[in-house]
Image 1 (cartoon, protein in one colour):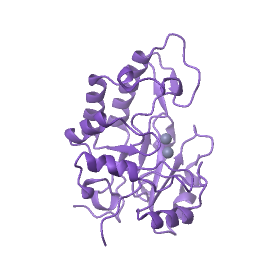
Image 2 (cartoon, helix red, strand yellow):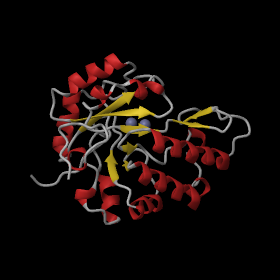
Image 3 (cartoon, rainbow, N blue to C red):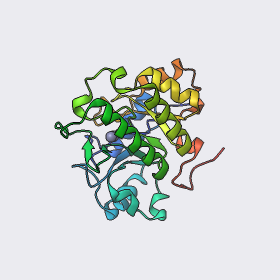
Image 4 (tube, rainbow, N blue to C red):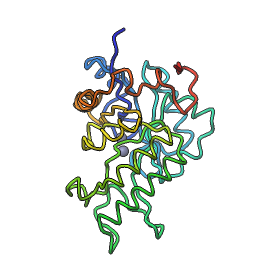
Length: 256
Ligand SMILES: [Zn+2]
Ligand SMILES: [Zn+2]
């Protein structure tokens, strides 16, 4: 079969998505994309899978379909640490998210909170963001960092250059490279091209993710794919858990 892009990041009704598993598969077939379902497994996302038992039920449901079995885990939430290896190995791949950033005083700044701690500046936030990312990359056994440029809501309107310095970008791609974690080009939170180019130049693997929650969004990875191709990333090098393996140790994965 011809090469097809993989949407490594999409949500179903098992967390906060609108589609059932088979609707996701159907949508991906229409768009010529290999589908995955990667629902939130976190006690800090409102509509999500919140217990080890529910993770097992979720995997049971996914195994009935021809679909890659993933999940999106919050770094700052402890649920991913509770999963035993035999459950982890049932995932084809795992996605990690920085949905909260730890400040030096131990406070967490959430990605979706509207109010920031007193005295926080974009510069001090970004310092903490990169420090949190370095801890994440060292410690979390995931295959992909979701939406690498997601920042807290009040700072999203800021100019890219105000947030991302040369040092921040270098620190990010070094940490991902060292951790063996792919950089996601997200349809939902598109990264700036300079950072993706830096990741590619550093040898970090690139992953495509719709982060889709609706029929219009799921499996639509056209823009991320176009960006990867414009940076001369070969299609076959884009992250595909079955082709490139996974840190879950999934047995159906072909290495090589
Ligand atoms: Zn996310
Ligand atoms: Zn997501």
